[in-house]
Amino acid sequence: MKITLLLVGKTKEPYVQRVLEDYQKRIGRYVPFDIREVSGGKASKKLSIKEFQDKEARELRRHIPNGARVVLLDERGRQQSSDKFARWLQKQMGSGLSRLVFVVGGAYGFSGDFYRQAHAVLSLSQMTMAHQVVRIVFAEQLYRAFTILNGEPYHHGG
Image (tube, rainbow, N blue to C red):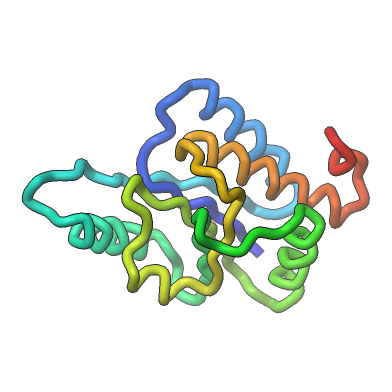
C-alpha cells in the first residue's frame, strides 16, 4: 500500500520542511510514503467561502488516484488513540487497498461535497492547530502507528 499526505498550501517554515522530510524517510522504511502540496490559492472577494472550498476540492481531486481511500484530517472528525489508529491502519493495509490518501485542507476547511465523498474523517485534536503543526503531528502519529504495529520501542514515548 502507498500512503500520501496531501496538503493544501506550501510548507512555509524551513524547520517544518526538515521535520517532514525526516518523518518521510522514517515512514518510507515501512511503506511508500509521499507528501504532496497543492496550491490553495488566495481568498478573494470575488469568491464566496463555498466557491473557494469548491475550487480547492477540484484541485485536491486532481491529485487523488482512482480507487484511493481518502481520509480527511479535520477537527470535526473522529478522535482515536495512537493504538486504535495503528490497528485501523493495519486493517486498511490488510484489505488489499493500494492507495491511502490523508488530506489536510485549507484555511476554510473542506467543501460539503468533499466531506461526503471522503471515506473517513479523522481529528488529531479538538484544539485548533496551525496547518504547519497539523502536518508534523500527523506525520509523527503515522510513524508512531508503524512502530506500534512492528513492536518497536519508539511508541512507548520516543
